Length: 224
Image (tube, rainbow, N blue to C red; front, side, top):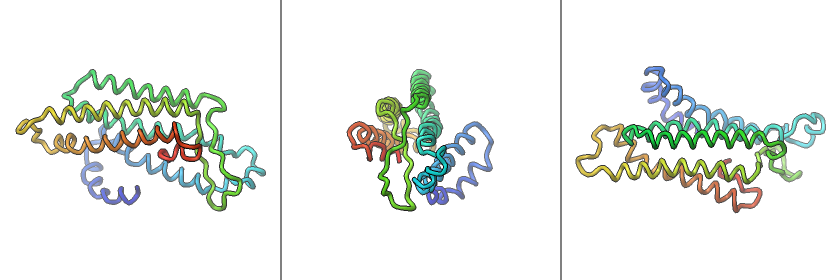
């Protein structure tokens, strides 16, 4: 991820940092740097000595169960900004269609409600139990929440991706020959958007299949 950022850093400075400080500017920053921050936190959690049995015997208030629940919030803070960009993109290619926009916004609100409800359920957001013989220095701390909540959240996410994907496909097919947009931005949005949304949708489908049918250790492998 860091390597990918470095590849486009020069263009980011040229086109983003020298531009207007609008809402889209800050949305870009959140989408670009928040996943990197959360990746650093996750990697630190994987190798942190806080999850070892020796530390837990001394500091009994340190427990993975108390911190794993943050994964719900982390997921939401990554997904909502990304979906906001997709919302703006869809709004543009559909000619400012308010019906589709309202539907997508409603789905995003439902996602937030699912996460808030899932986090508010005591005893339902435990850490994945790992073997006591897990060797140093690797000590994983992964959320293993209620499968029903995982299914509800993923179902809503897949619905959002499916609507965006179908909208992009239909909009692309509606252009014929010389009617295809002449501006570079619109061509990029429509041409590359189909493949991009297909990948995102496929990823969420794989995530749901693993969550529903995979054994305990691989249920959330796609999220990790």
